[in-house]
Length: 542
Image (cartoon, rainbow, N blue to C red; front, side, top):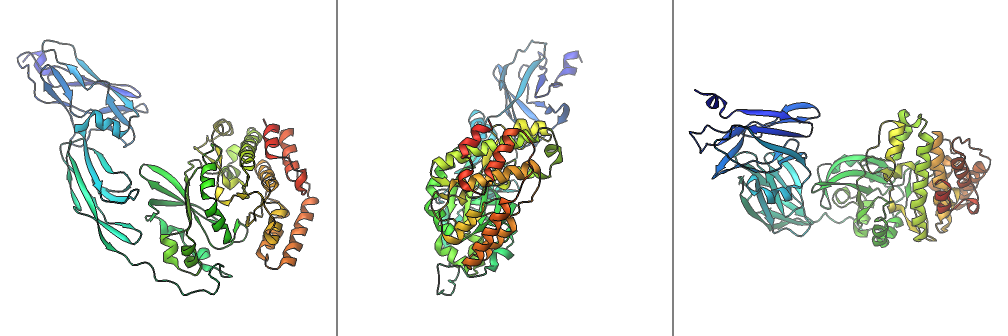
């Protein structure tokens, strides 16, 4: 046996950090039509060599005339990182002794594009018969997932077919069932499954009539006792709820998925709670009226984008009378952009950041960018009414040190919760006592209109809270109590006046850049007319 016989079918591997070269030796000259050759898949990721063969353990090379073609030209390791050859074909030279190289590189191409390049590597399951935009759940190769696309594209890296199963779809009171519930899908194959309307589900029984259908009862126990984990694993308006990421006085924040993208769903509560954002029933009606305008405003890059606002006064009336099933299936909700970095409130407990020399610069940046956002909002005729650290969000995860976090703030900050926004001069129905000015709670009691100065005070208190790390607003408890007794006008206004007096005598100690100290102190003025405008704050902190 000569040397070439010994080297037949051998594969040599040279690995790099982000790509790999697979070296294929030719068959000897007595056999110019080689059978399928085997390529073991190895890859160097993060400077560590990993052997990750696909199902079946090999890649194949098929002889076609004077060309070889890789029949599996795609590598998938996590489902997100993809590797493709620079060329899926190379010339076969029967008398060539030197090895031939197949060079794989990382690609960011979508499955849709790769499917067009390598259709023999994919199976396609097409779905028909469902109302437009309605999601459906499918189990593909044992993995259950909610889909909103007209087809499911499956990367298949072996000759074995993958199994699939479809579940019934509930849309409103209608149930759609697949004509074929399960099957198998092979490489290069496509199948079509049609859903048909199979039955109707009766709506929840109507609650007893109320003598005051437009007013919530004095105490709504449902929201205070409600467990938002009940939504996890269910769908809300076509979005699959994955987890509960937050809860506050005016609702819950859920992480949800539609297709391949994540969203945040704020489900509004229907019960006021102490020491948090306090929301009255008519807020939902105002929010519904302004939904189109708020979605338009949220397109501005300074705001968390709103994709949908789901409110139905009839369903809300059921919920406030204690219909938990309605709240579970049709809660008042706002679907928003999901912010991976969370809110800047996280910095308050992160000493690696808030004890660094960069902290004053971080607070200054946050104040400046939020002032720009408020200047745009105010010039558009709206007031936010709930500026606070918990509503200032980071698009992406920031760095772990003060320097890294400061660097990562550029283009990474957004003001959220536009659902609290009202037009300038319209009635105020909500407040966060720890951050709002006294006149905001006074407006709730008396029916006065919203003004941009309310946002400026809240921005100043936000800057003070972040910069000093102190939560010592002397008016917070008094304003909270005033809201809770808003029905007793005289008592509520008395508490507001005491809150105003406490702020007048308060001398907050603020350290940091002079321009930042000046802005915070001026913004916290008890007299609204003495506060700077939002655009003036943005200019001062440049």
